[in-house]
Length: 261
Image (cartoon, rainbow, N blue to C red):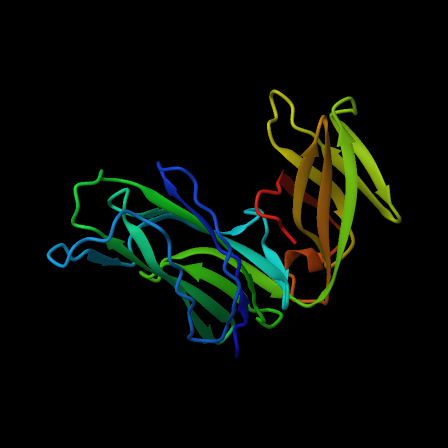
């Protein structure tokens, strides 16, 4: 199986000021795109940097974090949070992903390389990044993210079918819970309030349908919500619970921090 990966990479080193750039490329199976970042002055020949391979990472997950299902060809965002740099002037010399295709499951494994100068800069610092990738896993296969230690960190079940986007607005003066009618669908949007800080959408959906993701953008005192809904081809309910029958579904609505498709 070929893993096509069109990547947008955004990263920042902490606690230093944010640094952002984009890198787009087509990555075939087993290939990687080196990602270079500005750091402190290059050490002299007598101060060769220490290369740390596959350092610790605080979190590795699909974004939005509530997403659990995808289709072949969907653009998927992956977040890396807290890659440990060891020193604030260290540089990320290489970030790559290894693809493994096994029966019923696919694995995308993170590999990293950090160059740590033998210089008198502060200890600490972490690096965050976002990748946008297109996978072609088959329906019924589970795609796992994992670290270099083969520890699984997140997963998506791939389905076949159609995707639909519902867009609606919500103003600050609107009710905390508002009903939105879209054809045969009756959605209820629940806004953030003092004792319920999270936003979410609920609905009763037909067999084999589910919410995929929901994000919002703010303009003044109003927000615009983009809700993605999947109408999937049948799979065994034990594997894909929405195919068990008509069901209630809930999807958290999160800020569109990374330009979700």
